[in-house]
Image 1 (cartoon, rainbow, N blue to C red):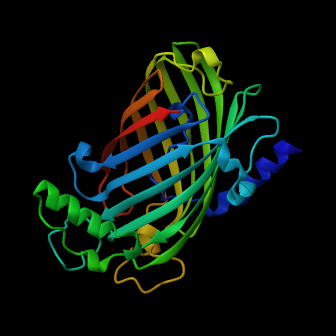
Image 2: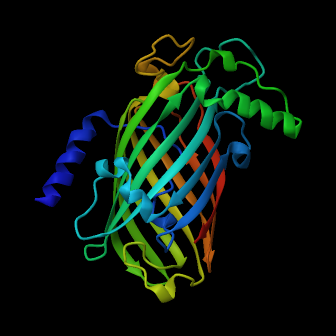
Length: 322
């Protein structure tokens, strides 16, 4: 009966499948072997030698059992009789067109958009069937309230770059409420050599409607994220590389099409301009020892809209157990 419930939920979400959040902190290959930790995520397309589209993002994440008592946790679906982690994260990122040198609207290009969110999440691990279920509830704002334009201007001033122009044309303020389910299933695990697991995601809400499917390949020295960690292994040295090819099925993306409630943004992309299927690959290297966890990664994404370009960005993650 429990399986039937999860299967029904995925079928329910699939017709309106979605995309928008960029920072995936709950992926199995990013597993931290401990129930209490803090982690900082920072993305920038500087690593892709570009300065457009998804231009920058950061996230502060904390995992602690205390969040199991929050009202939001009651809305998060978990496996029964499983190990569960609960967390809270603050996320902020921005999008720009291909040029930030003009105050004029660049028709056929990506709109300016800023996003700010608070995310409650749970990670449920069924160590018997080697599967993980992650549930995320996101709330926040898209628009000037996210102060992405001011943030970019400040960073450019610090670095001596050109002051960005055109943010007055950004997507207008709108409410973000998003709900997301992610299921991962281990297919192969050879200790300290290689692992392969699947990923299926469904997301619905006012920011992003998307489905996603793909695989993750991991190579190196690591513990399986689909098993209950042993206390003596928590401080083990781990180092491994990963590649995660994914296919995205896009239903709605407010960062390109405008908010659901406020339809008066100066400029948005029309529905027929959006590419409904995109391909991306996340790849990187992870190292952890004692209470420290670090990662460097890159992401490649094909064109999100018909007149757009493919995009490449990178990032770092630094975490500490406590």
